[in-house]
Length: 54
Image 1 (tube, rainbow, N blue to C red):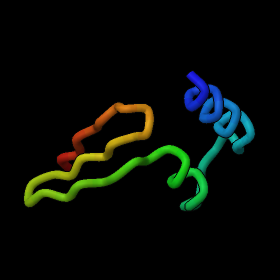
Image 2: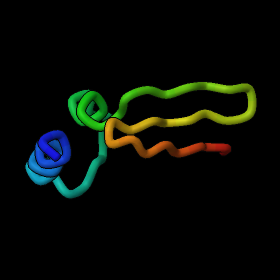
Image 3: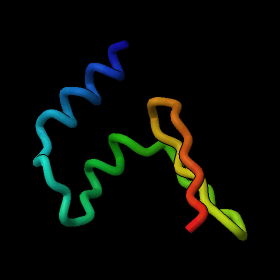
Image 4: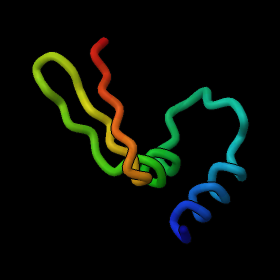
């Protein structure tokens, strides 16, 4: 719960529109990215994983 609260606070402090790459946001939100031949998977620190095929 503490980690979720920290992430919520961090996100709340960010600008509402992301127009440029922000390394600080990436480091707070993303655990790892795994690249496969036909897709890649983004794993967030929250435990959510997203497969990207395009």
